Amino acid sequence: MRDVLKSHSPDYIAELYKGQRKTLKEIALLLDSSVPSIKRVLEDLGVSRRSNSEAQRGHKVSEETRAKMSSSRSLAWGGGNYRLNWMGGKYRSPEVSLKQHQIVLGTTLGDGHLSLKGVNAQMITSCKMPDKQYIDWKFKEVESTGLFRPPFSHIGKSFRVDNYESWRLESRRHPYFTGIHSLLYYQGRKKLTKPLLEQLEPLGLAVWYMDDGNLSHQRTPRISLAGFPEEEVALTRDILGEKFGLNFRLSKSIGGILHRERWTLRMNSKESHEFFHLIGEYISEIPCMSRKIP
View 1 (cartoon, one colour):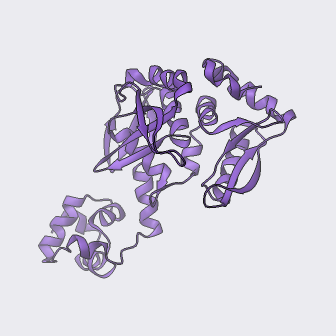
View 2: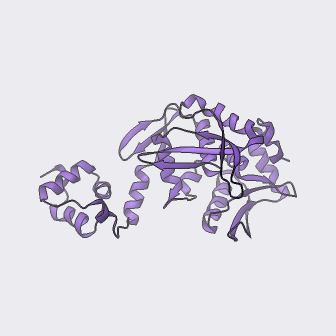
View 3: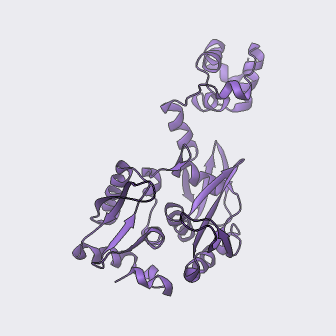
């Protein structure tokens, strides 16, 4: 019937769609085919398509399919610029260098978030008004990509203030951000994953620290990971130890409006010297961030 049926029987494909209720995209991934090919096969078999409501009812993605979907969205370096392999097709971002990618990566792990609407995601981040130097530095470093608009003042809601004024930096929607979204978000929330954390270099770690870190009363660094579960915080500690030789420890507190567990990465004064030796040069470029180094 079609090329995909040379190694897979028609009954098997129909069973995947009707019996196991897999989506066309999942079947295409499992059989190393394409959605149009699977669609044509089902039409040849006379299998009626499910409506959108029927497709969503009771559907769960298997671990095997989830792994394939994750790998199909993997990010890989090539030619000095970032390339995105997306569902078998290749998109080349507008000259995103390693340095620029680290700034984006540190920001999305920190104060930034990726908004996925329609096909592609965009990055949005903000900072309080006195830290305009910091967001200006970010824009200056990533401006040449053509993916970002200049920072602008924004009034919105924060956790405790209705009319909270901040500086905001937004990107346009692009497959580059969609690829990062696939590694960072799961079921609508940020998830600290090994494939993403292993991409961190000292600059990315510095941006993450400037976003979510500060100095303790003992003048030692701490990075807030409030909202992440203990196992993901422990994974982060382990990867930072393996990559950079940093000896963070986990610290738990109960706080916030909902009085939930909040995790923080901390280190003692002796070990903090190595941390600031690793990232201090990047922080010293931004005067308003000097409060975050001893």
